[in-house]
Length: 313
Image 1 (cartoon, one colour):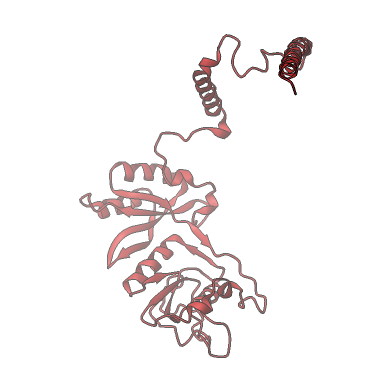
Image 2 (cartoon, helix red, strand yellow):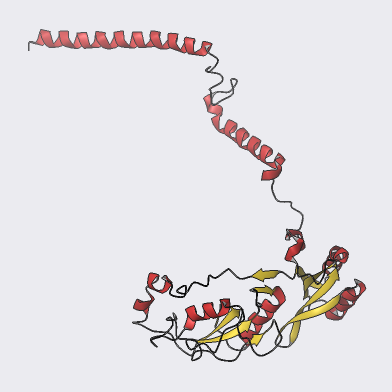
């Protein structure tokens, strides 16, 4: 191609580009005006910024939008921020049924004794008596009472709580909550779980099958220590806090089920294979319905530790 022809081709390209830009600008302007006439579009309505603000104000405007969202949220009861006032455990109880109630007119409270306050225990007992309440249980560590469980009339709960906490006699006041085990089906092969294989316990057993020097406390509905898969790894160190005796036999089944997962005899041609060949003890804090009280659970934990349990389940 000659030099003149190359220059002419470049000139044609430049002219075409100029013409295209001109047509685009004209068409775009017309289209924009037509769109702005419609109800669905206007530059002002669809702008990210208010009409009086420039794009340089975008950060300050974003802050205003954020503040407006916060204001809306604080005015919306479903999205309200928590109150700054101090909330007690009793305030967080949603249903009165969560209390341990002797009847329809009273509820049990767990009251932590403030040892830093001189005469706290005696004065606390007096306040319970003044409120027409009675001591129904205690929680102790190494024979030292650290909390009392009191049954009080419902109308006395709030004033009593305010008084003993306000005076410093109590470290805390909590409802003596009731706990419930998860339901366990009674299917014949339920115990043949896929869990041990899923976590590859059989590979771990190539390293160790556990050690009988380790004591695990099963805090539950007790243990059927007569079961042939459990009797060799069971030690009679626990307690029955539900019936207040030294025989934590299982009358519900949940505790035995859990004990089997932990320490059923391994490689004995019957039953299931426990994950670790450790010793197990039973702290029975849940009854024949799988239900239990907070104070019994607390005492079970303390007793298990005092008797040498290294793991609590």
